[in-house]
Amino acid sequence: MDKQKINAMIAAKTWSAQPWKQGLEKMPSFGTVDVWPKAQDLETIDALFVWKPLDRGVIERMPQLKWISSLGAGVDHLMNDPQIPRHIPITRIVDPWLARDMSNYVIMGILMHQRSMDEHKINQQKMDWNRLPYHPLKIGVLGLGALGGHLAQQLVDLGFEVLGYSRTRKHIEGVKSFDENEMDAFLSEPDVLVNLLPITSQTTDVLDLNFFAKVRTGTYLINVARGNHVVEEDLVNALDQGQLCGALLDVFREEPLPKEHPFWNHPKIKITPHVASVTSPESAINLLENNAKRLIKGQSLLHQVDIELGY
Ligand code: NAP
Ligand code: GLV
Image (cartoon, rainbow, N blue to C red; front, side, top):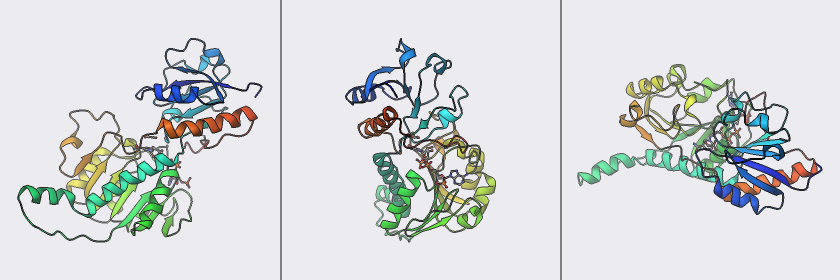
């Protein structure tokens, strides 16, 4: 690139753009940093950092655009948008803090389930000294990428038996790995299933009737990936029929979850409002700076999305 500094625009929608703007402005490789929709001069923008779908017609006003990054790990908001050009690199956030926070959230969910914390709370209210037993659990992780791979390793370190399912087989010490053709064998073993797949045309609606029919009776589900992985009616049926014993859900087909949605009051469902792991500008800005340096030097960018695979 013939420039020494990159002009960037942040289009963050549901997040405050200010910490990103302030952080990027301090970085040596960034020049002007604008925030959509206030930016005037779109013709000089080199890089666009996006969270949530872009307004229409934004990209066509940026003839110099050389790089788009999601501000999250997921890229579904970019992959589903026809205005996003396919000929410039699209990157995403792969960050140790994001992986740490995701692992911590899922481990919290697993331990709460394993140690019957809901029942202990009910017993406390009744002043009932009931020493509930707990058992070792087998944990199955769907998606062994940046987040699922980190989680699987953490779970092994905590002494859980861990199985993983991914498109291609992985070699993670202590993790029994299954590839995309081995879903049935994978599903037959775990007591807890954690979904950390990306949402693509292959994985949309994957958690359906057919999927729930193959899991062990009484499996506990944690969905921290995307709401569109789940056929909601099939999930409710699986819970009501006891195929699943409970579910911890952080992501939903519609967010915020509508007030009238049956999940809110379902006795076997726990809900959090898409907070399992939120990108921290403090950490992720270093990643953007690193890629900005690479762009200036004409090197390929890190953490690029494979357009064909959609993640
Ligand atoms: P990633 O690094 O791209 O990993 C994706 C994993 O899924 C890979 O192991 C991949 O297999 C596997 N996979 C993809 N398509 C598959 C298929 N058709 N069948 C089987 N396995 C498949 O993604 P990540 O960074 O770990 O993030 C995962 C997702 O977490 C994100 O896409 C996002 O939706 C979600 N997320 C949620 C939150 C939250 O707060 N709730 C926060 C961050 C991220 P290969 O390794 O073989 O390619
Ligand atoms: C959050 O959902 C992310 O994709 O980072």
